[in-house]
Image (tube, rainbow over all chains, first blue to last red; front, side, top):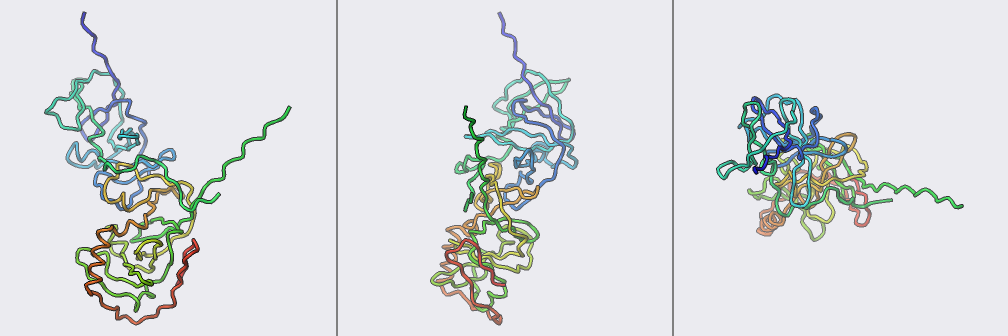
Length: 157
Length: 189
């Protein structure tokens, strides 16, 4: 008896003229671009932050890494969950087109694949990279505190 | 039958902050961290030039009792375009006097969100976190983040080697208004 390959859900996203996939379990939502807040920092992959449902979400332009250039046009932000050692955070990925939810069978990445590739899938005659967001977005220093909300100083009732 | 009284709502905890600008960029700082706010004009005469080529953001030092405070150019620290500073914040429990363009307003924040882990370079030392005020996200600076231990050591070395020059600009300084115990900064226009 042979085992039937198990299909998983993926979200297909478009960056310029290429499509990539992310495991659907890592996606929170697709939103229209909102105001981006910029402030000085030294992490080149991060453009700034957006406010989404009361959360402050960093905007990470992955096109630079995947296509070698940033996107001239961006229509949506794909809000994905980035898993860190002790917590999960949202990150907004600018994309150029609408996203699609598909069921497909993933072929795991091989040793020769780049770190940001967690696997491959075949869809509509196209072979599509499944992205490993942990390798694609900035990696924090080990000392970075795994907390999301901080105590206020001089707190008054 | 006794009716249980509804739970008392928790009073929101707040922190008083100063919103200020450097090169047009808005920042926040806990008002409890600011010991004194002065006009840059009042530094003239009391400030001494210091030359440390590795640290362009510090050009002057001022004496406060036994300590030397280093005057940090906020624009150079954050890598922003140069702009003429109008005010200097003497930061409590640090050796930093921070040059800023001006104060936007004083307000309160009710929530301080940690800097997302995606930010993973020097900014983690610069900011306590981020806060949302009037639908805008503003970085809340860390007073001790303007000069690292190594930078302070470098500056102390320069200062002790006697590489200081008194500012020759005519002084129009007024007596300093240093508030040691109070939480609110004193203002010396």
